[in-house]
Image (cartoon, rainbow, N blue to C red):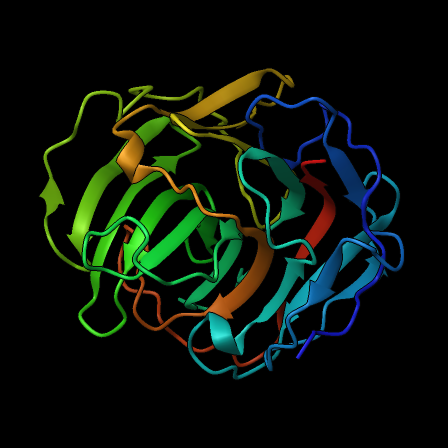
Length: 297
């Protein structure tokens, strides 16, 4: 069933604005950007039970309006029980994507297990690459609300829900110090990291943003998805481009299937931050706010 249409949200986003973007393979036209100010021809709610996306007034948004992704109190576990939007076009393949976003804020609420995600995702779970696993083409920028100064960037090609076998590489960055906390290619959820291949762990550090807090500040995150690379970046406090990860490892580890562009907030009871367990269920609603979102033409 097609999910109901959501408010209109895309206009041109300033390069200096703090936004999340996922950038493009060679393009003939500039990406389109939606400010969340009313009904959107580009996005719909997925109708998840965790909440209803709503355009609201917000003083931190560039135009005073933002899309609120409010996760209701006492939600179920998993993205399927979260609040979520998806692009109506499910066939984006390479190109520039992004968003200016303030992630879910759990300040004063204890060690909650809440994820804010912005990502491309393919729903075709056949085995097109012939490695014996269901394809799971996905590129993620995620934040755990219990550790809002750490960004998680992940590139997936395969995932088996039955066996938890995966093919994915992840990077975690402490944005306040610029330190790379984790850079790991995994073939099993919870398993050991495989030895890094050339081009998989660059840069070795990023420009520190000492006051970084993704849950109290609108910030920009971006990535450029191309056949041979995925480059993530944001901006430091001076507005200068800050490359977070320039992945140029084996091309077989880069998604290549047509995908939707999605954003969500959801409850996890399995994924802990790097500073210790945070799995508690939210007892009150928590919200992320999306100021703008970028799509390829």
